[in-house]
Amino acid sequence: MKKQRCIICGKPLSSGIMINRKGICSCCEKRIINIKMDTDFYEFYRECIKKNIVPTIIKEEEFRCQSYQF
Ligand SMILES: [Zn+2]
Image (cartoon, rainbow, N blue to C red; front, top):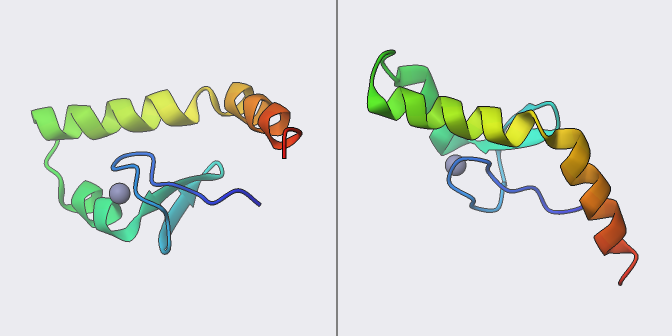
């Protein structure tokens, strides 16, 4: 399987949570949990999650195509 990366900070994922097979590292997870709603920060994270989880199916197709090159 491909090495997962945090969808928010982009770091390789060693621990954390998975949402719809997209990873969020434990560091960002904590930040999300402690985040206050109606802040710019909250909006930023929400956008990251939305952008990365919604087009999951399309991205997985791309990954499959790339893997044939190896
Ligand atoms: Zn992260």
